[in-house]
Image 1 (tube, rainbow, N blue to C red):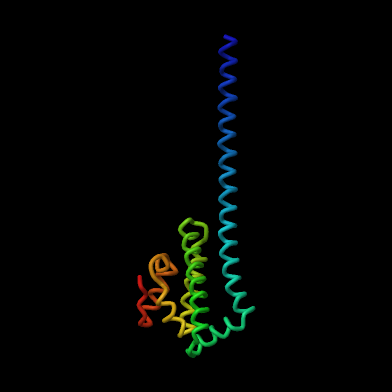
Image 2: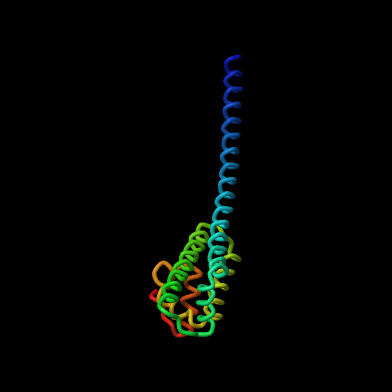
Length: 161
């Protein structure tokens, strides 16, 4: 009889230990998710900040955007620089799409990126044909790529979707 009571206590302690272990794992998963959210948001903010800083620190980049706003002709060097800028933009959109699909950024954030991308096309009319040449494949997928491709289509530019 004493052995049965002792076994019952051992089973109870073992069950409580398992429950405590499950709670600890759940808390660790929650912490890991918070870290992933922070890292994803931080990476996007850093990427965006670097793009904006390039315009501030490099008058040549600012000049490209001014020419795109007023539909002025770009020289060969500026076209090469613009191609790199567009590549950075497409990489940012991919990063945002991946983070969005992994539920690491909210719907409101994705709407902000869509508005920003469409506003760039509207604000800088000469940007559209250069962008249309590059928006294809994976870059035309996801909410931002789809919105950009739609805006380009409305303006008469077909992307290579």
